[in-house]
Amino acid sequence: MSSAAPKPTSAQLVTYDVSEAWISQTRTNFQDLSATTPGGYEEVRLAIANVRDVRIAIEKRRVELKADALSFGRLVDSEAKRFTGLLLEIEEPLKAKKAAVDDVAARKKAEAEAEKLRAVEAEIAANRAKQEAEARAVREAEEKRLAEERAKLAAERAEFEAKQKAENDRIADARAKEQTRIDAERESLATARRAEEERARAERETIEAERRRVTAEREKIERVEFERQAKAKAEQEATEKVERERIEKAKREAERLVLLPDLEKVSEFIAAIRALKTPDVIDLNLDAELQRAADRLEEVAEILSAVVEEAND
Picture 1 (spheres, rainbow, N blue to C red):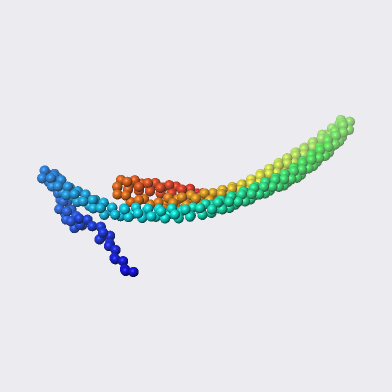
Picture 2 (cartoon, rainbow, N blue to C red; picture 1 turned 90 degrees about the vertical axis):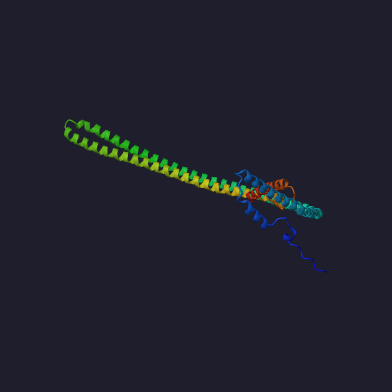
């Protein structure tokens, strides 16, 4: 097989009737022109026309050089499209079969996750019921103990009051007996009365001190019970918060797994958008519109990519 002829370089294929040397010389010739005088104005006008004629000639030559390339590009695109269509006739049925199996697997996985979630919720409900029952038992036991304490204090108070009443009755009886000797023993009775009053005052102070002690003890018991109930409530609320957060996390993971097939399809669609290539056209305006359309398609791909990333997070 004969060796292929050397391919011409891009510089050999692309030739224009102008050179950088001519452009450099033209810049030197025209850069000091001034249009402030009638003669200078005419020189500037002719210089503009000269440069414009060369620029138009370059554009015509560009169109001539690119015509064959556009024709060849259309042929390349046509053949690629034909072969792609033939391959898609094979690929699409296979993808449909795979998608059917994937959908069944995804559905079964989602159902399993849902069943697992239901089991977790049932376990949480059972744990909550158990905790409430234990808390109720503790509360009832504590209430029973406090009731017994209150009953004991009431009995002690009743016994103390009975003793006080008996003592008062005894004092009154003694006073009644002593009344018969008042005239003869006034002085000694006065002394005895002062002593008795002092003793009674001491007893009253003792009684008041005991009353204050009982009140303080009752308030202490009530404060301890309040603090215990507040701590138990805080612990229960913290436990429930942890369980709610775990359930919410499990729900989010289940939802993400359900969305996986759709996210894969969206990713394929994004890849298809980014695989699109704009055709080469001669018209500059049409070429600019095609570029803007490609930019908008890329923006759509970016938006969809952000959606997929957010769903995966």
